[in-house]
Length: 273
Image 1: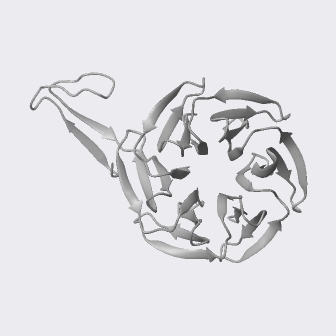
Image 2 (image 1 turned 60 degrees about the vertical axis):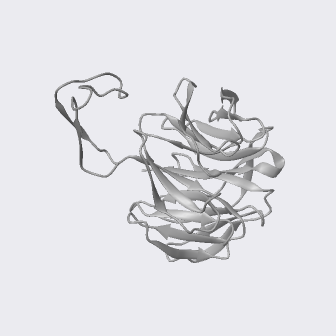
Image 3 (image 1 turned 45 degrees about the vertical axis):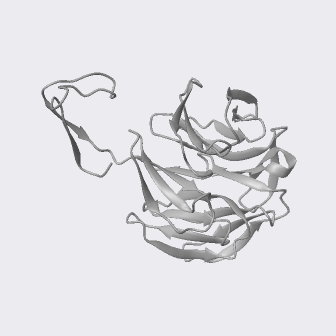
C-alpha cells in the first residue's frame, strides 16, 4: 500500500466488498493510509520486505548479504545488519542502500539509544559494539556468550540476551554486567512493551515469555516455530518472526495468536514504522 488515499470502488461486479470486517455496497469509501508498515529481513533471499498492517506486501530492498537485524533511527532511516558481509547498511525510504559500518563479526541484534548511537551484538566475538553516527565502531562490552538480543528500557538501561548461558543481563553505562534473569532456554530477541514489561523469545522453547521489572518470568505465548525477532505496533500487538516455518505471528495483548504473514524466506529481523 502506498501513501495517500485508497479509494475502494464498491458495487461493480458483485456489488459488494468483503474481507474487511463486513460487506459494503454502492458507495466509495476513502481509507486513510497511515503508512504503518512491518519491515522484514529475509535472510534466505537477501531482501527487506514491507508488509502493511492491512496485509499488502512489497519489497523495499534486495541484493543484501545475509540480513539478520533491523533498526530505525529517529529520522526514519532503516539500518540493516548483514551477517554474511559483516556490515551495517542504511536503507532509505526509496530502497537505496549505502554502507554505514564494516567488520562487524556475525551481527545478531541492533538497537539505537536516545542519542543516536547504534548498539550491535557481535555473536561470534561475544561483544556489544557502539557505533557512532559517523560509523565509527568501538567495543562496549566483551566476554559474552553468544549475545543475541538487545533492548533499552524506558530509563535508558540496556538489556542483552546471552544465548550461550540462557540468561538476560543488564548493562551499565560503563559496560558493566549484572545478571537479571537466568534459566530462559535459548533466548533470542528482546523487546519492551509500552508499560515497561520485557518480552523474550525462546527459540528452542518455541515460546515468548514476559519478564517483570523484578525479574519474574511468566509464559506469554507458545506453539511458535523457532521464534526470533519481535516488534510491537502502536496498539499493543506483538509480531514474532518464526524462522522455522517462514511466518510472522501476530499476538494480541491477551496472548491470542494468529498467522499474519506466510511464505517468507527465513525471517530474521523485524521493525515497524
